[in-house]
Structures are given as C-alpha cells and as structure tokens.
Image (cartoon, rainbow, N blue to C red; front, side, top):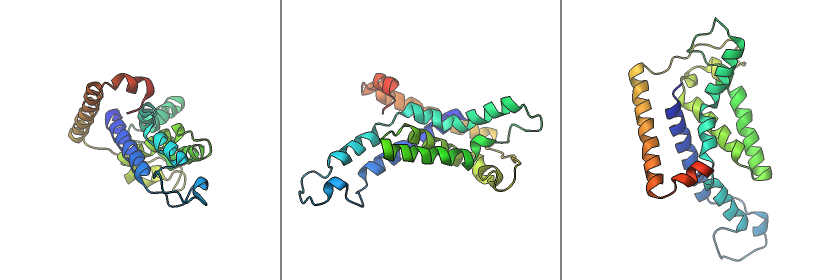
Length: 194
C-alpha cells in the first residue's frame, strides 16, 4: 500500500475537479433563471451555494476514500485468510463493481440532498484505481465480468515506489507548511477544508 501517493493524487484531483466545476458555465438555466432577464451577478443564490459546496470539500474524507480500496481488500483478506492469494492480488476493493456504485450513490446524494460527502469519498476511491496497477489488470478491474479469479497485478519497482513516496511526502509537507503560514492549519484539521 502506497498511502501517501494515493492521498496526494486523490486530494489534488478532487481539488482541481471542484475548482473546474465551480468555474464551468451552467449549460441549462436553473429554475430560478427561467423568465428572469436580470443581468446582475453571474451567480444566482443556488449557483452561489453550489460553488461554496464545491470548494468546501472535507479532504479528510478524500484522504480516507483514497485508501478505501486497500482497506476493503485488507479486511477481505483477513476475513477469508486465503493462502492461495499473493500480496500482488487486488480483491473486491479494487473493482469497478465496488467503486462505481459508491461514486454513483455519492452523485445521487449530492444532487438530491446537497450532501457531497459520499461523492468526495467515492471520487477519491476511483482515483485510487487510476493510480494503481489494477488499471493494467482488467480481470480485477472488471470483476466478475471476466471471471471470478483475481489475477496478480504487479506494481512499480522498489526504486520508483520510493520515489513516488518521497514526492507525495513533499506535496503533503508543502501543503501543511502553506496552511500553517496562512493560519489555516487548525481550520483544516477541524473541518477538513483547504
């Protein structure tokens, strides 16, 4: 498990995605826009609230979501104790069958109730799959469509793994220093917001 790279990639991806969604022009008018010809603010109240929610992501949930596939696999491995599985085999936590329902449920909750927490968790879990060797292992990623066996998925070599750990640690340390200098570290620790 390469925890720091997964956390850094997920947090960076969710941060960038939330900024892009906030900056994107709306393709269809909101119900409050219909019949209105005022050209005041670019954001109406609903859009302003959406923009605030998109930038109010709880990155503690994103960090947990980024390692959730590994956590699920460890629990599954401990519960089953299969001697036939190698450490290079990913299990249910690394499948689209597990992660896509989580992501889609998050989208539905965000749309219906305005609760973005599950979406942050699900999006981070999907970034885990994109950064893992499982993307080169369709037997695991698309399980059970290509069979019930979980094939081995070899990751990076030891040197490249160490390099990614060092790079991710540098990103985490730089973020902590930046938050500390801006006087926002305590806020981040208590709310998870950057």
